[in-house]
Length: 254
View 1 (cartoon, rainbow, N blue to C red):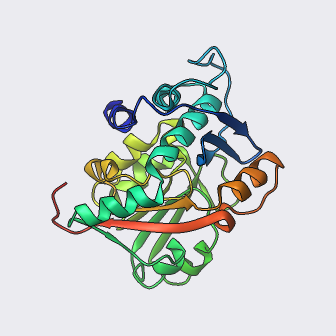
View 2: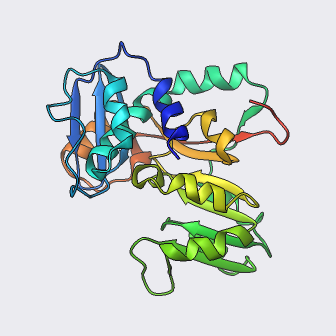
């Protein structure tokens, strides 16, 4: 189960230093110089953190390794550290240019881009997202699965029974924090899997584990993003960056 996490951590260089960590009500931010990474702030402090001291001044690699922590608040910081490294505009462009197996997709909202593709298909969505109402009248079956289910949602335990029979599965990137992602990918092996949201690390490593599309965010206005998180604003992060979608070309070998 840790193989995915170990691969994500392995690529992070040791010579980048963490200068700042900010916890907001929705997101966690990790900064090094003029670069930042963000991830969903997932609550959970029942287990002591791995990093006992301040993360400031530590290597980005060490802080990124906190993604394996069962203190989910600390793991959120680890995810933000990973995204500082992976969700970099130039890095992603270079990656696409060097890999013929990868391609950029349009920058539409994921659920807008898929509203016609899912027609008459069986679809599961892990988490709540804007624009999923576009699917309601088009899909054959729609299952929204949530940790804290609202009316009409299915509980997390339903994943074991539902996901193996889906055509499309949309998974929130924050599942990397609570460690459910590896199992969700196993269960979704018969479906096209789209990992969605600002917590998604934009790296082809994830394609090796069954993801077929990455739909995440690249922060381009680091100052504005920092202000949103520090001032506890509820503005969407797309205001300080851009949505980005990457697909592995069918049959491509990474």
